[in-house]
Length: 340
Ligand code: NAI
Image (tube, rainbow, N blue to C red; front, side, top):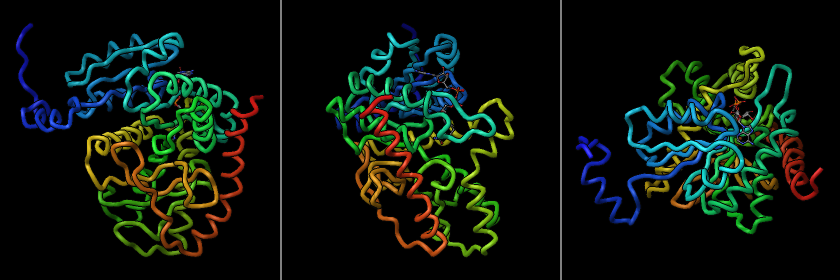
């Protein structure tokens, strides 16, 4: 074998501190739906992440091509491709983190719930694979409708006797990323320094930006609050309409998922103080699933934070979203408990 120059992330100090904990230099990540609009750019972003040592790409089409292509980037992670259902278990074997953007996206005029009939079955099958092959993995679900697919995943894992609510996440990072971008525009600052909590769920009015808790603090006018809340809630639809039938958000979603994965992996490695909004099993409200701020740790969720002080506008938004979110959760649970 020829000599390879040592890369920064493989320096002896890094190796020693990871060896001391008995861990390898990085994590194994499985991406299910890796060849789609989100999957492809997300594969690339994960391949560039030094925390990822092994990247498994699974899809029902095109994995050999995407895997060959991605594998030529000169970054550390080893990439392997898996094609079709018979290879699902191999794709998942030993995964620390499973990210799922498999399923159909919206076209103009569709709600996320219109995707339920197809995506519910896809998520059920994929989670059955997780339950069998890597039941201790952290799971990040992107497939819509997230408000229902996360409860579906929970029910499938319960049935298999391996459910750990601390390890199951619905990815709502794109709502936060959009909120940060739009708020930064209004305030007139760099979005890098802005953080807007977004609570509730991931569809229409269930997306509840908490502008009163924005960091850095800012006092918005009534018009600004209306504009921002609407734009954040309809950010996905804005992209669906602009793409005019060619799909929904893929590039910004891949960015958001890569950001969320990075947070999960850094926390898994032992870094402290990592806080993200995500849709999780929760007792913060009377609903069994809800997106709020969570502190991440070595095993997924370490702590779920309370809502914090809401203003009247946000309290009304919260009251309104609960009925819709409750229905979406129940629809997901019913899909597994009494299959159609
Ligand atoms: P896409 O259609 O471009 O890609 C989906 C991929 O999933 C395809 O490569 C397809 O072959 C694959 N797939 C289908 N059935 C599969 C199965 N049984 N196992 C493995 N892979 C399978 O769709 P796109 O744009 O990548 O969106 C994917 C999902 O993400 C959609 O449901 C979309 O609504 C959702 N989404 C979620 C967002 C969020 O914020 N959580 C934001 C944007 C999209």
